[in-house]
Length: 427
Image (cartoon, rainbow, N blue to C red; front, side, top):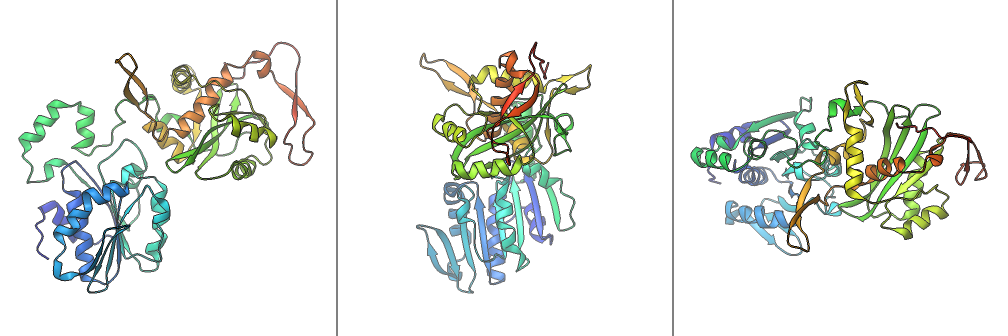
């Protein structure tokens, strides 16, 4: 196999670490390297090798043609282009191209090597699905991507493990690119965007809805609420892959709101979600649930399952403004009014990546609106923060006891509230 690699690509080929994490700027030649690496290993050692792109369409449009171009015809036994993208070599090796947007396709008996291309744009759970498939054969993995804000790819780049090695290359490291052309691009876009796209630096996403969110300020290393805390829940419904149902649990005190637990799932029935909710709140008294008002049918099901459903207003702009207010750092108290548990990694990633996008209105003008992508947790958080604060004061009065409901689980109990002027737990 005679393939031309530039010096930095050659350095990657020579490196012997089992897991390589490569963050690189656009046009570095990452896909060329990744395809070359798989072909080289497949021709050298009989085995099973995967190339996984964020979507099946990207795997087909970008990588498939490179495999066909680089792989020597004399090494090929069979090529399949529909309904899957697969190549069998004469030496017994098998190469398959996959899309991370179809988790069910990411399962198999065992792998000798895998490339996760544009890993920053894949779901964090993808690695947890495929990593066990490498264990029996002690297979290798390459994570390669341009950054996309502070997400799971950044966490991987910071990993402290002798099996891993992280590489950082900019677009300027590709000697086949004219530096003058890159300099022109630098003048055409913001410094933040150029730093991310071409210098492969981790930046907050452009147009962030919550730019004040900080991992140093808002993340707390505590999972359980304090004893006797006031607990509420919130739900954003979504049953398709890519738009999951997101449930969050919130502790309310005189100091503010602490989001301490939650989960996201796809393709689950409301009864299955009910069981997961009960499992997370065992031993806790839930004062109210603020659900996505777009699904009244599912809300009625939750009511029949004895969850204390509260009315939810879906005003997006006002809701975002209220959440932003609670994220603001209070210089007097030296902390914000809202914090979140460290273990809710998916929720944290989505909050950081929650961005504005422009859409054309009926009058032809453009307006900013939240991008409908990875927004399940931000929506769930908004339902609670905004609607709890908009409750009538008497609904926020302290609860001194309960009556009715299931004597074992407590579901369906009605609160007995202290009479008199209510206490605002948040203000």
